[in-house]
Amino acid sequence: MYVCGLVIPIPEDKRDEYRRWAEMSAAFFKDYGCLEIVECWEDFVPDGKQTDFRRAVAARPGEKIVFCWQVWPDKAQFFAAEEKMHQDPRMDAAGDPPFDAKRLIFGCFAPLAAMGRADAP
View 1 (tube, rainbow, N blue to C red):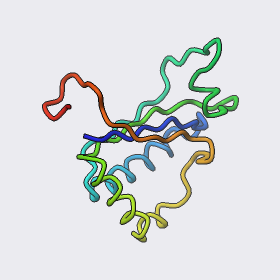
View 2 (view 1 turned 90 degrees about the horizontal axis):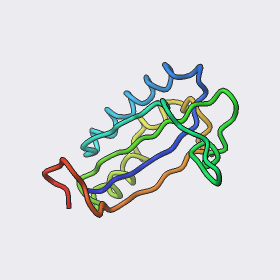
View 3 (view 1 turned 135 degrees about the vertical axis):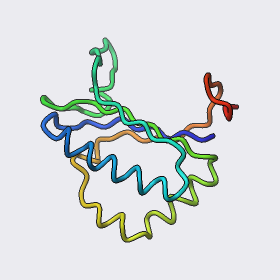
View 4 (view 1 turned 90 degrees about the vertical axis):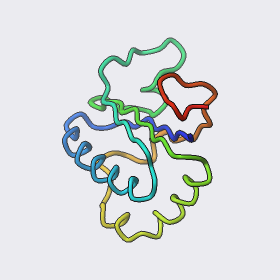
């Protein structure tokens, strides 16, 4: 298992547009071997004393935080898919995302522990 995580500031009035974009993207990622994608819209995101989700992505007034993760079979399959996806014309056809992609946080992780998955480390 290999996990890619994102934290994204989304204008609150673009929630439905983001949902459509995320659902279309999920189908595309599935074609390349992604096992699972979970998109979570901010419900309770408190301000921290030193750091928090909003500061991490320089969220502006009227923006909500989306926390997303993708589960891939392994690191090699993720990187092979990334290379192929960027050559797929559907990626350009998807249009611009409904958020400022320069402010999203993206990272990939090898799980240390997991609960509830048969394929966990």
